[in-house]
Image (cartoon, rainbow, N blue to C red; front, side, top):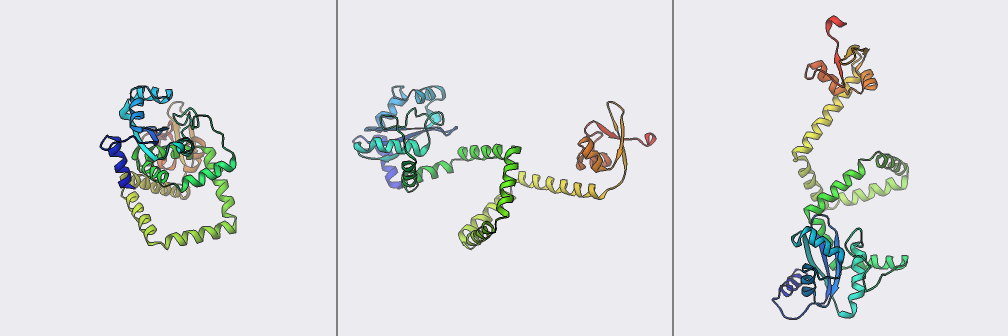
Length: 289
């Protein structure tokens, strides 16, 4: 596969004679948005895009706005002329690059395409078994920018209260299903029994635990959990004073957390003198007791 791609690249750069017919993809390096096209002379078509003479106004506008250096150009498949329309439709659907997700304005093949559910299932199966598509997706997943965007999108999605609530309910239903528990246990045992998979898992754990930011978060979580434990065990009654209104309140750490939102960690810092106020409240002075 690498030899084939190297040969295609040399031809594209003019090191071999003869035009190349096939399917190409243009990818924005930052956003990951793509344009899939076909041509009987791919090198010429790329030059047309760069000069603003291509037949995709949306891609042309993006090239003008971001500049050619912001885009990657790659041949995904060489094919005969009579196969170009079908393969273009195939990759536009497979890469999901119809506007607004991508720069393609139609589903390819020279006209708008409409796939039935059965046809989509067949295309999906064919796509998953395509060596060209697999190689393209591996390169995409290995791109640090793509990895960072996917991680950020995942963090945003899983940070919403709605997602957390739905996930808790879903996991509760699954845990109550004996068949799911048995299947999960069997699958985990099978994965753990694979030496290569286990080695990758341990290597990943070592990378995570060696990350200073992870260590800091872990220490903070332990500290917070210990502070909560101490708060539950501490039944001492304290008095606090509102620094703005002078209002006084008496209670335990847990009382203050419930009434004023003062966390156990912050209240502990008040007691140790590490901070003077928390949520607008301070400890009462001896003469105020």
